[in-house]
Image (cartoon, rainbow, N blue to C red; front, side, top):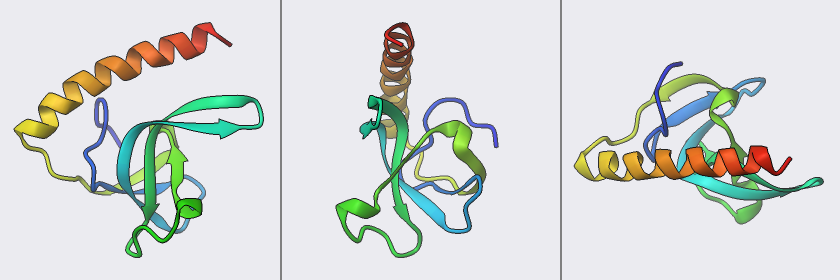
Amino acid sequence: MYFEGFLPIGSVVLLKNSTKRVMITGVGQKGTTESGEKLYDYVGVVYPEGYQNADLNYLFNTDQIDTLYFLGLQDSEFFAFKEKADEVMKELRAEEKAGQ
């Protein structure tokens, strides 16, 4: 799969080593791990069921995506958001890497 920067909200993907698809519901999310806070590219919910509760939100990164099944809406609002979000995420990733 090749798509530069964030995928749009509503995109449906299959993660590596998974059998259930996930629909992207957010980008640039922080989650807590055993080693502290970690920055993730996406948060999503199982597809087609959608949101069920907070425990069933999945945090993942672009490199974990195996297959793109559906590309979400791409309009002028998305492209304006994407430009800013890609820039901010690049800066946050650099800060996260420097702090390790």
